[in-house]
Image (tube, rainbow, N blue to C red):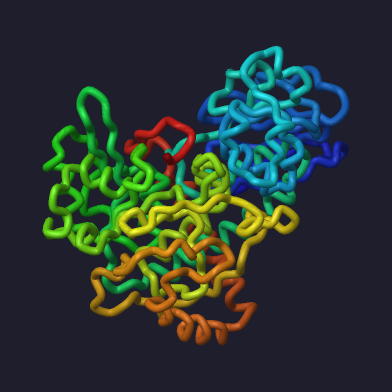
Amino acid sequence: AAVLICGAGVAAGDCGFDEISVVTSPGFTITVDSEYKVLEDQTAGIKYGLYCDRQPTGVDGVDRWFKVPVSSAGIRVPVASGFLEALGRRDAIVAAEAPANLTNACLDTSKIRALDSDAEQTGVDVVFSSDAGSDGDRSVRLPADDTLAPLQLAEWIKLVAAFFNDEKRAAALFGGIADAYECHRGNLQHVAARPHGYWVEYAGGDKASYSVVGSAYQKELLAAAGTTNATAAALNTTDVAAFQSAVSDAAVVFDQSQLTEHGQRATEWYRKFGYTDPQNSGSSFLRTRSIWRTDKYTSASGVSNFAEFAYVRPDLVLQDVVGVVQPTYDANYTRRWLLWLGGTNEDTVVVGADNYDCARPWLQQVAACTAREDFVGPAGDSDSSSDDGSDDGSDDAGGSSGRAGRIAGGVVGAAAAVALGVVGLHYYNRHRRNARMQALRQTEFGGAEIGLARRTGSGFS
């Protein structure tokens, strides 16, 4: 059911506002009237009124008003930069909480001022923050952690777009992203032997703690990629032995800990998680060194690009994860954000002209996905989720995957699936997408119903 509502008895469109629907229950709604639109952030309990000419009177419940389209924006959360880049609105960013930490190479950060006081917000029409009140009547909250499922978080691009009267562009892009995500997700649900995979995190301090992260974002990604992620309940413990026992059946581990010993981070990881003899521990992921992180793409100063770009493109994040846990699925896909920490080369890749074309940015382009039911995974290969050799750093975007010697098997099945025909595929994909949207609306993975979310920061480390 659509959540967009038109004012009773008034033909919407007098202001040129586009009518779009919100489909994943992401935590906001859009209501359109002839002279204004209302965006309700259901999580924060705040309503933003947007008008095109004169601010309406007699409208109940609106907490703050904005004249749209806005022309300038400040950002306090990385995902806001990603949303604006995907919408083709990077030039609207005139202020940021930490301009030097922005990883989008297409931004001239020398022209973006620091957003650290009310005085410096003069001339900024809207500030996208992690809360609804950081910048007074210019504040607009965006979710900045992993408490939403991937598509729910990505759908917030529609709320950002509403401030630029660009909802149709956002809806078209999100529709393509959702179709691709659900297509790949559906393709992976026929895997015969699902590997066990976990997201983990170490936290230091007076008493070190070890977590198996079960937040909605990670939980859905692992399930979508065809892994088994329910064999260990989410936990946060100070008992390292309990943690090691919980992940002992893992074929692959994804880490989001704060690691600082660059060049020696794998050694640092083993030490912090208490593995003194990892190769002889009996765990598959340790024997094959299948430990991964989300910080392969970074800025020149080493800031991870994940929270800025990846949250915008869950279809690509899913393909990254699939490329690790099911390497025979697609021989042509190149990982962007996932770094093989267990490999011999821990080098990150700086986002720049050689992997991101500012004139034709891949953040705005969605590759078609072919629906298929023939992929069952590599038969009898329980350790298929990891590399056996070194990572030579050659998997940046546009190049070969660095794993092509092991991932040729997916091509034949993909070619056979093309025979289904374009029309049949369209309706098949749309049916699967609608089924998943219904599941999200019923909070299968999203929000407080799960009760597993821990992180409150702006993204992965």
